[in-house]
Each structure stands twice: as structure tokens, then as C-alpha cells.
Amino acid sequence: MISPATTDIDFAGGTLATEQVSLWRDGLRRLRRNRLALGAGLYLIFLVLVCLVSLVWTPYKPNLIGACPTYALPTLAHPMGCDDLGRDSLSRLMVGTQVSLAVGLATALIVLGVGVVVGLIAGYFRGAVDAVISLVINIFYGVPPLLVAVALYVLLGAGLVNIIIAISATVWMDMARLARGQALSLREREFVEAARAGGARTGKIVFGHILPNALGPIIVQATFVIPIAILTAAFLTFLGFGVPPPTADWGGMANEGLPSLQGGFDPYILLWPAVALSVTLLAFNFFGDGLRDAFDPRQKR
Amino acid sequence: MAPVLQVKDLHTEFFTDAGVVHAVDGVSFDLQPGETLGIVGESGCGKSVTALSILRLIQKPGRIVSGQILFKGSDIVTMTGEEVREIRGKDIAMIFQDPLSSLNPVLRVGFQIEEAMAAHQDISGKDVLQRAIELLKRVRIPAPESRVKDYPHQFSGGMRQRAMIAMGLANSPSILIADEPTTALDVTVQAQILELLRDLNTELGTSIVLITHNMGVVAGLCSRVLVMYAGRVVEEGPVEQIFKDPQHPYTWSLLRSIPRLDSDRHERLVSIKGIPPDLIKPPAGCRFNPRCQFRIERCKHDDPHLMEVGPDQQAACWVTMRQALKSDGDQRA
Image 1: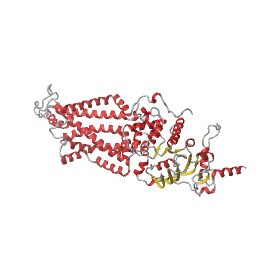
Image 2: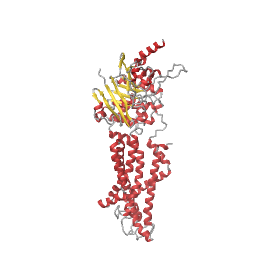
Image 3: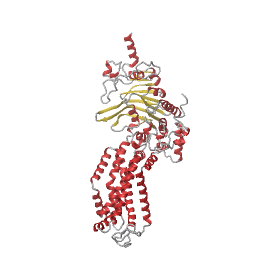
Image 4: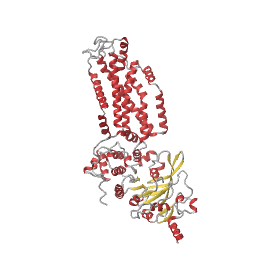
């Protein structure tokens, strides 16, 4: 045999792969090619910037009553007009991003934390553990979200934190089910057995080996949680169970705009928050879709 | 010398809806320090289940029902989960058939080797990376300093198996169990991996249990061989002895069914007639008897156990090839 000792394939420096592309970089590249997702991503960046700016500066104080005449139509000084109390609508719309993003991100994080951990544990251990967790998941599915929100409102009062808890309690199950399914299939993969054979602890196997492989779909699911949370929060505030006035919130603004639309004198008060909400929801959904497509291994080109 | 591993009358069964599968049914063997033991047999004969049982990796619905697995004197079967975990990867390491699927696809190779070490040692920082590079060098991966940062899919098949072996060696185990380590590789790479295992065996003194269905692989690496059939050991002995003078008809047939490069092109390949028995309801008597061409009446109801048939050679057969071939010759005469 001619020196079998040295190599399998050794091209100068030992690189055979044409491009050093990791799974993530590959996904990001495909995401960039998706125009719709790219546009959505840019809008979301813009939204975050507006939110950050609104923390330190708005054209007028968002809760300043009498900044301009009530029901004033858009003018140069007040590009979005004023509401029924004479507050500047643009300023309020800008500040409204804070509630929306806070609710969306906080809910996504809670759902990630709770849903992923619970789901991975159920899927990895199977048996009785899975049966109990699945039962809890199904019970939560049975509870109407509005009921949870109203119950929390009654018990704990209004507030941002309570909305986040209420929404998290009603949307974490999808994430748990997804993580459970991923764990169920990944636990049978040979690298999990190899890790076990190497003496890896259970926690390491679940969070060090299974979780990284499930991260793609989990992140995609998380981006879909955000718009649901934003919409639900706005809806609750619109109904009066959410963020208490006078805090500027898109749902609350829509609520305030409704009478004036019915009265027939100022459609803009309702229009702005509705448009902002719709575009934001669309953007998150497009972005999530783009992420899913980008990280779907079956669409590899 | 005291054996490093002793398996005594191991029974591993799978409790399926169709019935109890007696996958490993009374297997016993000793492994000496520094020894290379081959376990051969066709698919479903229980060789992989034996290997998995040694590390208590059998999953539901399977279970080790009885027997002892003594590692340096202590019984793995009765250990707590944490005690077994301590042994896995540290004292007894295992490498699997398909190196691509046994490496985690989203983690860097170096990181996985580091993790194999971190599972048993309290080490950190730069030392770990250095150790990982050394291990890759030891298994002869070219340019280990840059390769350590690669993902498994950037490795070739042979390199992946080398990386697996590097992970196996991370904690300098006294036993390396290799479950069909070359089956997924092409022939030239197979030879390289076998040579690597042989070198590691002589350099580090690691005992190797090699599980395979490939007689050639056994011949190339092992000093002793265990032939399994239907969950039992049917023959055991030194490799030269078994290859030269097999006594169990199954071993004999298995060796005859290996295609030879120097055989006549028109010669038909010899095969063993029939299929392996159903391990839920194994045949009465010798398990090989329905397929055995040397069967006598006794084989149908009396189950043979391993008997001394030569120097250091044992076979579970009432007839043995020595007598079978003699009487065959007598009849022809």
C-alpha cells in the first residue's frame, strides 16, 4: 500500500469545500434574495429606530392636551392631525411603537423560554413526562385567550406586564408543540446516541445537541409570535382591557378614533394606528415567511 | 492478566407488541487489556445490541434482562445511571457506523471533540483547543489547526470517521467499541481507518471491540473473533484458527460465502440457504439447524452450548466441521 497513513483527500491546506458556508450564512444569503422579506426587514429596522427615537424625542409631548385644536386635520405642523383631546397624533403614533414592540418582543422571549424548554423536555423524555405536558398544552388550548386576558385584568388590574403575561399564556403552546416535535425526531438521530455514548449529561444532550438543530424552525415560529402578540395587545387595549390611558398605544388610539369616525368628522384618528398596525403585522409575517423559506433545507439551491 | 471487560450470560430482550425478541441470548466473552476482539455475524444476529448493552444504551422497549457486564470488576448492569455515564466515553468509548449522522451537523468538529472531553474532565480555555488539535493530528487529519473549526459537512467520509475516533479517544478510554466503523466508507478509506485503529491499539494499548459483518475487516484487525448467530455466540477463537479451521457449520459457510478475487469468473457465489430465524420464536434445538447442511437428529431438539473444539477454540455444535467433513468424505468414498 502506498502510504495510506497521510490523508483522505488533501488539496493544498486541506480545503475541499468550495465555499466555507455555514448553515446560518447560507440561510441569510437566501433571505437577502427574497425581496419581500428584505423589504419587511428594512421596515422593521425603521420601526425599531422610530421606537428608539420616540424614547428621547417626539415632535410634541404625546400626552400634551391642547397641542393643537381638537380634531385638527393634518397640517405641516401636525402631519397626522390631532385627536379628540388635541394631542398630536404623530407623536402618539411614534410612542405607540414602544408598547407594540415591547409586547411583541417580551412575549416572543417568554414563549421562547417556556415553550422551547417545556417542548424539548416533553419530546426528549417521552412517556409519562410527555403525557403530562401534552395534557397541560391541550388544556391551555381549550382556554379562550380573551378570557385569560379579562381574568388577569380583573385579578391584577390593567398594565403592560399583565397583557404580556396574558398573551404569553395563550400562545406558548404552539412553540411547545413545535419544540416537542423537533425533539421527538431529533432524539432518534445517531448523533444523539453518539453523544449519549460519549457520556454527555442529559441537559447537555437536550440543550447542547438537540436545541441547536431545532433552532431554525424555532426562530421562525418566534417571529410569528410577535405579530400575534402585537395584534392581541392592540385588540385588548381597543376593548379597554389593555394598557390604560393615557399611554399612547395603537389599539387605544384606534379606540379613541372610533367615535370621531362614527360622528363623521375625523377619519384620520382611526386611520393612522390602523395602518401602522396592519403594515407592522404584514412586515413581521413576510419576514417570518422569508426566514422559513431561507432555513427550509428542502429548498436548498 | 485480568480481563478488562467480562460479559457473562448477557440477555437483552425487546418487548414488542409482536412478542419478546431475544436479541442477545446468553452471550459471554472476556476482553483482555490491549486485545482486539471481532464480533461477526449477519444483520440481526445481536452484535450491535451486544455492543449497546455494554454501555447500557439499549432504549425502550429493549432491556437487559439478566447477566453481568464486568468492567474492571464492577458490574455495569447494576450501576446507577450516573455511574454508567461516568464510564461512557471515559473508560469505554464507542464509534458508530455512519460518521456523518453521528456527528452533530450544526456544531464545529473541534467543539464536539472539546465537549467529549468536557463531559469527563474539568478543563477549560486554550488547553482544550490544543488537545482537540492534537487528537485530530493523532487520527491523521491534515491541517488540524484549521480543520478544527470546520463543520462535519466540510469533512470527507473518511475524515468524519477519523473525527469520530478522535472524539472516542478524547478521554483515553481503555476500551473502544467500533460498531461497523467502515461499513459506510469506500474500500480504500476502509483500509486507512483499519490501519489507524490498529496503530492506536498498539500505540495506546486500547482494547478494541470491532463489530462487523465483514470477515475481511476482522482478518485485518482482530486477534480474536466471536461469531454470533441468532443472539448466541456460536464460535469463538483466535482469528487464524477460525479462518483456517472453522468448526461451526455457520462459520464455515460464512467463510465460504466470501467472494474471492482469484476465483473462476463463472463460479457461482456460495450462499447460506434460508433466512435467519425469528428471534421471537427461535427454532428448537440448535438455532442454526434449519439452515445447516450437516444437521443430525440431535440438533433438532438439543441446544448445543460452547464446547472446546481446539486449542483456545470453542464452538456450539454437536457435529463440528471436523467430523462433518470426515463423514462427508466417507460417504463419497
